[in-house]
Image (cartoon, rainbow, N blue to C red; front, top):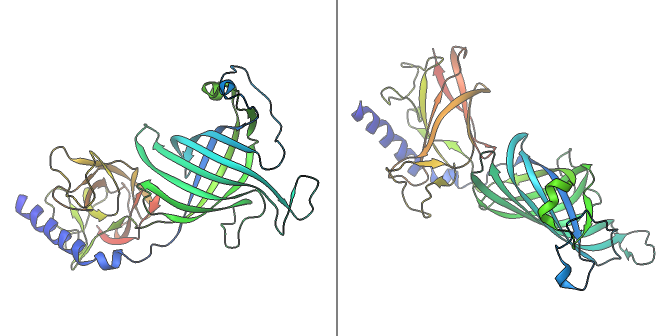
Length: 335
């Protein structure tokens, strides 16, 4: 059994090394969504800095004259419709761009409210850090050409990210706020933000990741093995509905414990992928039993999963997802 496992893994790891050129190609874009709650926009409206964040009560603040500055803080509650945690922070500088200005507005050929830099620090629902996405752009007004159809406003560029989102780029827009962001003075104590409540927003990110989660392809087919003996799933030895399989993939991102870039994963303790990992078979969710960095390998992972009961016999498509970014499909045989 050990020899079969070593043979299968050696084949998979060789395939990983031989396909790095293909993996370096530009990954196709994907759509991610972020839902936030308790968003409060704190306006800098006092000159006495000793008064900042001192008022325990709910404060009110009307948006000041143009060129004012404010900071928004909110809670991330869902990522791609799945429960998540984290924080959105926004630094905003009012512009008041408009084609029909009133006194104090800025005349322009476009209608935009402000310059804004957003940071989304994202955690799994259990509190495990995943990574950060950072954007910069223009608030309000129409979305840019080519934005996803669900975007109704905003024109921001995705500058990059950290963790599993290292190297991402793309654009971000917003569906109208379902509950308006609450405006407050920066004298208000932000420790009471959740108790006092705030707005709800839905952000849509058109993301081009640096790489995709991808099942390795060997000369004999996808690197998907029977967990019982680590022989490759094939037409002559197909998988069975309900069976536990192991797939070998690249691009699943950071682990816990972490490893330095370019360093191999440890064997003890095993390095668990810190992003949500999902596997589907013919589009149906499979139970993921483990997702770890393969010991001694660099950017090579082993994911154990159970073929969903009731999976139809014949060719079956398998896809792996990490941090809500879906990889390309591979095909295995199911008996």
